[in-house]
Image (tube, rainbow, N blue to C red; front, side):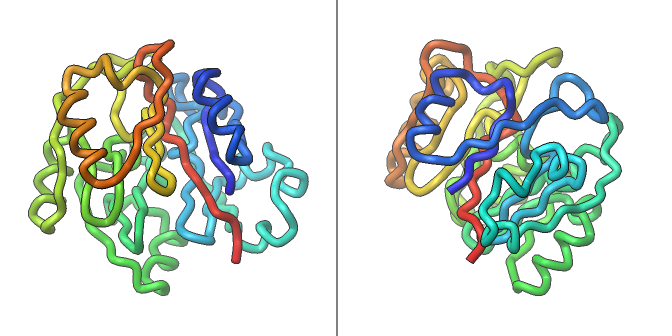
Length: 237
């Protein structure tokens, strides 16, 4: 199992992840602005055994040495015209879990869109292009967000969504970051980059997560910080 992380991930969380996963740390991409230049959810999108990745990121990783020969067969490198200007930052910024994909349909990269259609994966459209940053998706039934539009859209689809207040999450050079960007979910564990207990909505967040059988792993040594999500990929079949 691979874990894609930003170069800015906290050391405490990085050490915990390395105990169980093969961690791939992304270097800054100068096509992007500083706040998101090493964020995985801008440049990488795992969907089950398939991995979509920006071509330059793929080249930068020296993929032949990073991934096993078998897993290379499940990787699709896409020539994406990344730039600091929206929507050129969001082509891979969807959220996937349990045969459900959530994103802005207009901005989902066509190669990803074709794959989702071919695999008969359920697609929920949201007007938020930064779905990956804005949504912590536990499973196909439940998630957490501060985004009012995502909350309304997913709630109308019958999902159980916890709406939390905006802010209280650090993001370099920005007023605040987002819950999806500060976290990652694998198995029954929810990882937070920083101290989730300091979030003013921690109690409802804790109850929401634990009531669904998940456990929380965080790093109390630093403030809760958006690092562009922690993305897990199981590898190719």
